[in-house]
Structures are given as C-alpha cells and as structure tokens.
Image (spheres, rainbow, N blue to C red):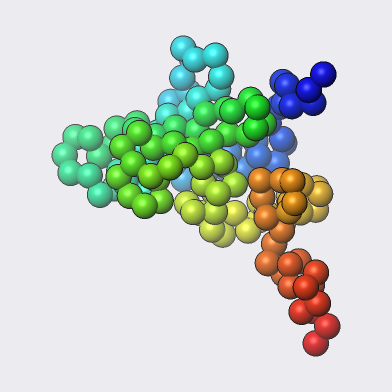
Length: 136
C-alpha cells in the first residue's frame, strides 16, 4: 500500500494559498470540470507585460498533483523566466511573494516539514546554525 495515495493539502499550504487568493492574485476562477482542484488566474509574472485584451486572461493555474501531495503552478504562455516551467507551490510562493514565503517557510519549519524529503527548504538562519555559523 502506497502512503502517497489520496494525500491531502496541508493546513499550512491551504492557509497560504488562501492568503494569495484573497490579497494578491486578483480574479481567481476555480475550475469545476477537472477531476483535481484547479484555480485559474492571470499569470503574475508575464501577464503584466502583455499588451491588449489578453493582459488579464487566465493563462496560468494552480492545480493539485496527487502523487506529490501539493499544488503546482503552471503558466500556459510561459512568457517570462519565472513562469517557463511548472513549479510546486512553495517555489511559486517564493518567487511571487518572498516576504509571505518567509512566513510560510518558518511555519513549515515549526511543523517539521522543511528540508530533506520535503518540498520546502529550511529557513536560511536554520541552515547557518546547522553549519555551525551561529556560534559567534
């Protein structure tokens, strides 16, 4: 039996996804015609650079990847370096809102879900301590 089946979104990921939706990403459309949760919105990386009516088109999405147990961001235009390739939610948050990512990263750290086998790195201060850099 695989422990990766039917993995659910963590409460921390859900909290920060909702914060992004509420305060940052503008008009979000939840797609109901897919078997996995999918949220569509204008790409925060390349849509602002677009001219004309496509500027606010919902060309990107966060969609659930069950075998990874997380949401991934993908832009279907791939119009900038930040959105050329699909990325998991923590990396998307880090690129799009670094300050919010730091809060998220610390919350994940305190929950024991950073580093090693997780998709979110330890906060830099923790890495410094682990490397012996905090003894000064």
